[in-house]
Image 1: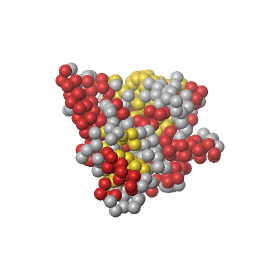
Image 2: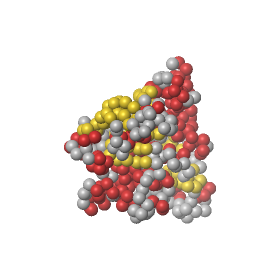
Image 3: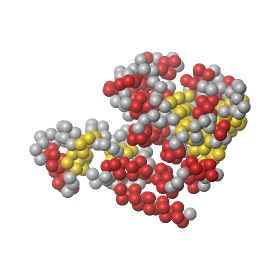
Image 4: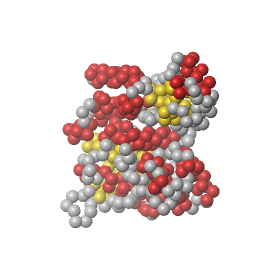
Length: 393
C-alpha cells in the first residue's frame, strides 16, 4: 500500500485533517443476469476530513456504492481513488485494514471480549502486544466507555448503544484515514441513536477522518453531514450539497420529498448547542461534598436543586433541597439524570430533551463533563429567529 494512505492517518489530535480525499469516477456495478446495473456511472468527490452522507430510499444502491470504496463489492467499471491511490490496484485485504467499517448492530465477534474485538485490525497489522493494549485503552476512553469496566466484557453483556460504541472503536482502532458507516445507528432506540450521533460528531471534531455514512433518514443526514448526496435509482445523484443548501433549495420534487414538510423547523438540526449561550446558574456539587456545603450553595442561590457531578465532572443526578434536611452524606441521594445533551447536539435534540424533562437540560463537553444548562427560552428565541429569516427569504 502506498505511503499516501498509510501515513495520512495520523490521529488529528492537533485539529489537523487526518482523512484523505476519495474520488469515484464513472463507477458502475452490474450483477450477472440483471437488465439494469445496481449502480450506474457514479462520479463524486468526497472531501478529506469531512462527513459525507449517502441518503436515499431502500434499493437505490447507496450501500453498494459505499461498499465499492473498500471493495467489499467489486466495481464492474470505473475508478476509485483514496488519497490519490487507485483502490482497485491495492490488495483488498490490505485496503480494508486501512478503511474502517462500522455497520448496523455493530457486527462484533460474540466470543471475543470487548478488548479482543477492538484489537482485531491492529493485530492483523502486526502491532506488538504493548502497543495494541495501549490502543484498546485509548479507544475505549475515546468512545466514552470506562476501560476498567468494559475491557473484559463480551458483546452479550452490553446494551445496543454500548455495542455500537465498541463497533466504532474497532473501526477506528488502526487509525484509518477513512471510515465507512452503513446505517450504524439504525437498530437502536431514538434516545440512544441521538447520543451515538452526538458521540460521532464529538469524535470527528477531534479526529477529522473522511467519513462516508449511509442512511435512509434525512434528519440524520442533516444532523451529521458536512455534505449530503441525495441518491435516486442506481445511485444517480439528484443533489450533492451542504445540508443548509439542500434545505433551502431542493434540486427537484424528489429531493423536496426527502426534505419533507417543515423545512424551516429542520433548520434547528443545523444549529448546534455549542452555538448558543448556556446558563451557568445551576448549583453543582461533587459527590464527596458535604451536605452542609450543598445546603449553603442552594441557600445562597435561592435554588431548590443541585446537580451532582462525578469525579470526572460528569452530571449524574439531581438532589432536591428537602432531601438534604436529614441526610448525613450525598451518597445515594437524589434522582438519576434522565437526559442530557452535548455541545455537539442539535437544538432539535435539545428541544426534544426539554419536552421530556419539562425544562432546561444539562449540556456536556468533549469528555462528558458538565458545560452548563440549555434553557427553553434560548431554543424558542432561536426558533423565532429562524422563522423570521425563512419568512423574509
